[in-house]
Image (cartoon, rainbow, N blue to C red; front, side, top):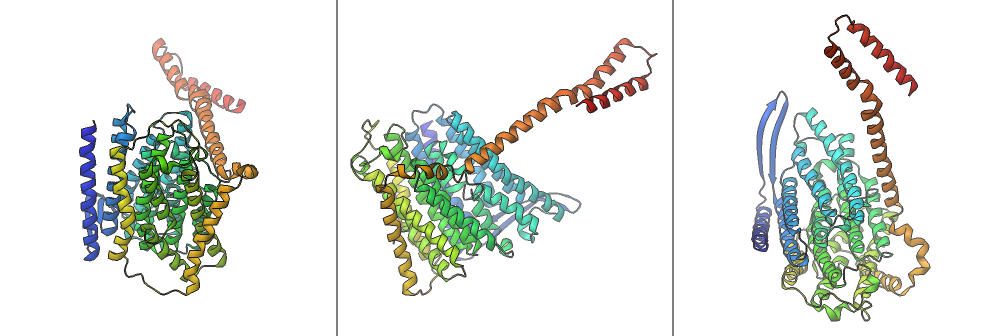
Length: 554
């Protein structure tokens, strides 16, 4: 099993590097390949499969393959005691195939196949440990994602009216815009569909690293990049408030959270709002730049967190941590580097994308309220990163019985490869692809970004040093994501109970007894007795009178 997984990892990693080189080559010479296969034609409807290859699709595909290979290598050692690790290998393989189908084909039907595959495999991975909490989280995840699938199905209906499902060739109307944004917002966990992403953290940590931080949740943003030329013809200013509010809300909640994996999940949610807000300003290439850099350092962060949780006897409460630097120096150093990338500390890869985006925000036509929310979100990002570093690495450790004090070779190799990419990825892309973005700023604007780091640092220290019991009245409000979790759980619980009652009382109850089953019994009785003197029309009249009587009674 381990030998077959290592071969699988090797081929995925090599193909990821090949796709990266091809993507850069296609960008340098501005190549674009479109393959279209018309399967059959019915009247005006062309049923065709389309593959669209450019530098965006190839670079994103290479990121997915590299991260998948590293996560699978990590899980060989991390989940070595798990008897069902073979199932994880096949699920990750199916996940990669679904991602490839969604990335390479802009045809709305193949996007739906990949989208549905991602949703179902995500559900299987969330309920991997098969506990009650996992089942609840899986149900919340799949029902939120079903809403996005409804949007894509409606887009397929609209495409049938046009005569083709290659919707990149047509202009949208307001209903199609509504449905495509419903799909994007549910998959990328924007407000008010944000509650499923922190709930999905019941999955194994390698799964969270691959699925819920770097690839699956960015599918909505990738779809928006693909359909960028069509979407930018609409006025989307109102949606900037939604994405920046998602960003600010998740950053604020992360400062009150004590569950280690949930803090990283809320950080992912904050960065998704950040990328969405850039998209609504029209800078889709900057959003893609941040997407590929964020995928690297966020998956690395989850892998480090998994190592810490594993060593602390599966304890996720950061109040029990402390002094991890003395016990796991390599893992701690990598964790600090990934958190610095998240904050945008100069000359790490996160700096090149985030600093460029900040500067574009400063010169864009943004009102004061949006600017305030945006800068608060950035301060909260630095704040929860500083708070997390203080809880994990300062002081002596607060929880004595460690399960293992060794750092595994495979885990270290996978993390070192990802940390090298996280450190140099941004400089590499900035020097090759994004050199055209260069402009001058006033001193005040440039200093404002540095001030933001200082404010975030002091706020993080405040959250670390203050006694959180004094905020106990707010903690439940924040940890339930402004009561979104409770709202969605009651929504889907009442929805499922209503469907069950309808099916048990109506479909399989009196309606079945008085309609199809009753006619079948009557016909059987007539045939069995062979009583030709019965007037069949008379029997049907009696049945109809009985049926109407029962309807009146009910």
